[in-house]
Image (cartoon, rainbow, N blue to C red; front, top):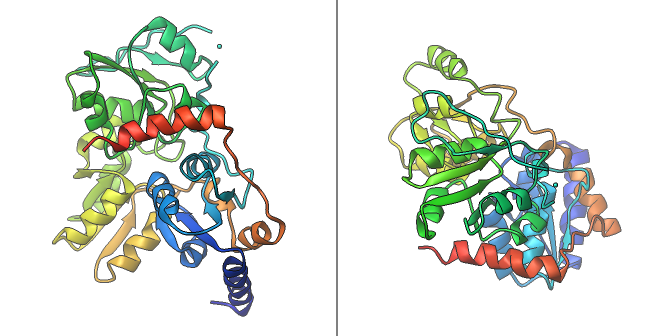
Length: 328
């Protein structure tokens, strides 16, 4: 570590102690940000950890909806987002209010999502179109959208959440790829939104084939936010936390990683005897990379940017999260 980075780190750690704070870092953050954090993980996992810690402040190195989740679960704590411009394009693809749905088709797709709703439409439009059908909101959504939903899900438990609900249909928002993956693994009809992660959506089946050519014998792990054509030919489909567990437990020594390249840091750190290759070298989320040690220090010095979810939204949003957490 350079002397400049070392000085930044020292000042951050001093201010962290003075303010009784903890630093959370998502798996996709810069390497040096992950290294300064008290806890590194996925968004909901981090928020749940923070809710159990005796601290006054949470500095969340991630994107806006993640800091909102921390505020939802820890309303008594000050939550800071070091980079206020760090948003999630997929979370921004769905709003609570606006126009009508359009039918989409998926030729050759067995048990396809019944409908896919373009991002210019809203959650309340879908609910009007399908009265009484429960809404499953991916944790990668705003607090307002969670509050309007029946239950939340993660990429790891989406099928289990869907199966827990009454009836033969569910509305699944906002990631069409996660919805298609869920539809492949449940007999329920999945009504999906046309949202996507711009990092995972760019990956194609040809990318997987090319990666296998370059690294024959390597195990391909793919995140369920990838296209269904990619998931169909991957060796293992799982969340970021699932990739970490799988790589550690597996007897295999070489892996192709189909998610944002920030996870490579932790994979290599926790498995120094194994080799990891990115599925695509450009699987980089610019929003996740906005946070730097300088912005973490600024957040501590200036107490910015504070994320506080209003009680009228926080309470129903927490109910949606709690319903998910009750599922065993």
